[in-house]
Length: 284
Ligand code: CAA
Image (cartoon, rainbow, N blue to C red; front, side):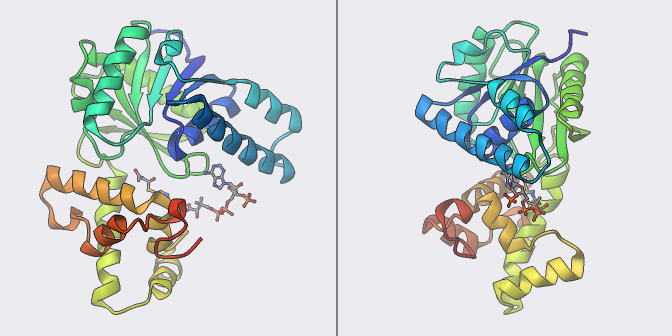
């Protein structure tokens, strides 16, 4: 088995990628973050700096540890700069073609022993891996939103993943302070297989039960012990992201409950995307 993961690349520094990069630098791992432009990279660096500063202000992190963590982050717009990473995590747009294209590029520039991981939530890891000639080094590392706060990471074994790549990704999950679970490359893996249809049911209940958004959220928080209500959660995840994941799971399983409720599709089409657009079920 190849050595410990000491340097990680994160491709795509949106909400998930920036959160993953934050976890890496906090865990003492040198991290190269790649965005399409350095300007976008700097925005992500600013968000990471903000959250680490909040931790200092709240007494959860020493100032020196915060500064050292920030120094471990380097930014680039070139995939070629990921050549000396031990493991690269892809967190770009949830579409198969651009992911496959990126993995082909990663295969060209990364060392042969580097693990290539995808943070996809609803696409098939095996299909992503099928684009390259060394699919054994591809695994899923599926983090949950917000990545720095949610303890789980699903370590996903694709059809051709090697034991070595799988275990190295698992070990990195532990090093990042997460609770990793091992799973296979089945639609939605474990959590989204349950959570996506459940959230879709919640949204359908809004209309069926003529309950208000606030009351549905209160119902699930106070009656089922959820940390946040389903409407708040879909707003947090992003209505476009949730609809896209629902469509991907519906396509694979043909289960009616996976299909996105029309109300959510209409919201997505209207640009009501939740927190990121300032308006979803709630206004931010
Ligand atoms: N990155 C880093 N730090 C963050 C952050 C982020 N993205 N977002 C918030 N924080 C920090 C903030 O600094 C905040 O502190 P301040 O407000 O003092 O600055 C701190 O975290 C705590 O924030 P909250 O007070 O909001 O924390 P909370 O105790 O209310 O918990 C929560 C927040 C962890 C999100 C909790 O509400 C929760 O567990 N919600 C459920 C989330 C969930 O189910 N996520 C899964 C979504 S599904 C998914 O991700 C799968 C998929 O593939 C789509």
